[in-house]
Amino acid sequence: MGCFVVSSIAAIGVGAMKHIVKHNEKEIASDEKRFGHEVKWSKKLSYLELTLWSGSFILAGEHMIHGEVVPFPPFLTAMANKDDTIAMLHEMGTVGVGMLAILVFAWAIGVLFYDYLLYKKHKKECEAK
Image (cartoon, rainbow, N blue to C red; front, side):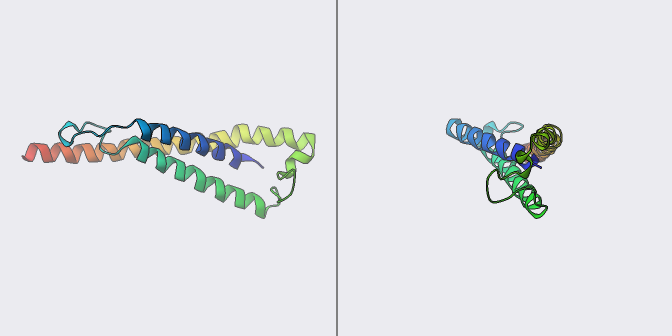
């Protein structure tokens, strides 16, 4: 019903966080590379933001196809009836937050794995010198 709203709000928050992080990032010299510093955090956050927005748009499209989202107020058909609104909020709190948690967890695992591969490559290059 409205689970795509959760990822949209999270994408807005991640976008704001990305701009704050990008503003505060400092260049790290190539000899100072440590685990997790090969790729800037603003880049990592932009991957998460892109994933959240794309998932949100796909879910919104799916909800439009099923008639749960309409182009006129109240936009979400579940908001027309009080009982449906309660069900929608429950779905947003369970399904929407659950999908968001799984997505952020998968992103974090991907970031850690990629950082590990880059760190391992950098360490191997340093040992070869």
